[in-house]
Amino acid sequence: MINGGVSFWWQQVGVPAPRPALDGDMDCDVCIVGGGLTGLWTAYYLSALDPTLDIVVLEAEFAGFGASGRNGGWLSAELSGSKQRYAKSHGRVGVQALVSSMEAAVDEVVGICRAEGVEADIVKPGVLYVARSAAQLTRMREGLLDDASWGIGAEHQHELSVAELGERLQVAGALGAKYSPHCARVQPAKLVAGIAAAVERRGVRILERTRASAIGSGTVTTDRGTVRAVHVLRCLEGYTAGIRGQRRTWLPMNSAMIATEPLAESVWDAIGWRGAELLGDNANAYCYAQRTVDGRIALGGRGIPYRFGSRTDDRGQTQDWTVESLTGILHELFPATRQSRIDHAWCGVLGVPRDWCASVTYDPATGLGWAGGYVGSGLTTTNLAGRTLADLVLGRDTDLVGLPWVNRGVRRWEPEPLRWLGVRAMYGLYREADRREGKGLDRPSRLARLGDRLTGR
Image 1 (tube, helix red, strand yellow):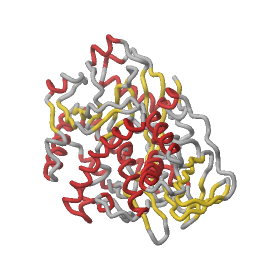
Image 2 (tube, helix red, strand yellow; image 1 turned 30 degrees about the vertical axis):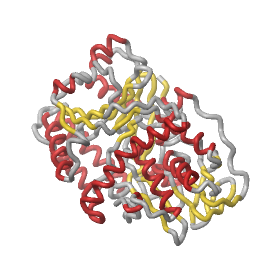
Image 3 (tube, helix red, strand yellow; image 1 turned 180 degrees about the vertical axis):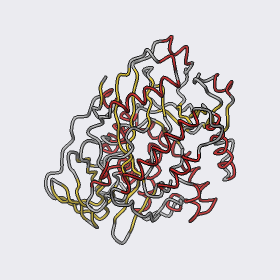
Image 4 (cartoon, one colour; image 1 turned 60 degrees about the vertical axis):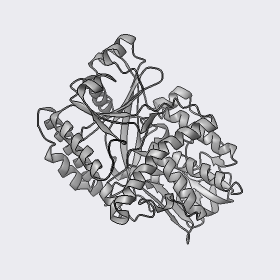
């Protein structure tokens, strides 16, 4: 088994040859710090809207090194954070507009990939969230009712019976499921590599192996020189803590994945997963999975959720016990995989704001902007954020700049050791809640709600 190497997705396609690095001081119109999908989509739409702009993307490793090339491949319309929090500024209509924009963004990404010739194993079969206990089923139904009360109804998602679920795939112990059509499967590394190439075709410069240490109005300080720009955009997601003064802005939450060997036909016959639906569950410490184009199951969930001091991982390597935990989840869901080999394991970080809601911000007075805090729902959200940030930079009066996540103020995380203790305690409570629910608790455990209150989730 390979552990690390950035991710299985990059191992599949090969880690790209390095692009040029910054070579001394330079000037440009727009400097984007971070070569993940937020930065790349922002550059893509800025260059499309104003081809005269001189745009530079700075990346510490290579484009797609972070979460953009390590995630579960869910091009999902799932909303990051709480509807109630978004509604405080924009009401029910604002929340509905944000949900509709997320759903449209799924199709936007699919359409751009088709137009740009990006081959990323994209297919849009929807997503299934399976309930495997009475408590999970209750939580799932409560979520559906809550969404319906916001006007997010049957055209967005609906419940499936055990029999209806069984027509798509067999999950051991399933009591029902929720289905949404607004989700596509992708191979993340292929997607981010394709968008990076499309951005370069538009004249944007991507400078790799260039680590930014400080960001200010009009300047970015790096280990290879200073970049001066009219607009400076921070698009670092889980790596934001590496910028001077930003350690408590967004918490870098860790998520891990495993990928099986290509499964035998007899295993697929037992599972019945003949389509490419994405798969999640309704646990408190939830999992997420896809059937890959080459016949594997790639499954993810939380490992060590947070490293003290906002430290990030070492090129994707994860802990043995995390691999064992995820393998156990895989075997519980699909007993037929017990004899199948795990070929790869990896991990990465995602950005978590203090209120667990994403944001896009731009200040015309300083030329500073940023986007992120997707809390694990970033593959689609990066596209919507990039389009929104481009409109804000160019001063365009569009529907996107009126969405409730624009220019939100969020307080900072507590200093250590408080944030380490809080996050570790939250996931400890989630795991214990899942254990109790799995042993027959007929309602969602109160421990999970305590975990939510503890960290403001």
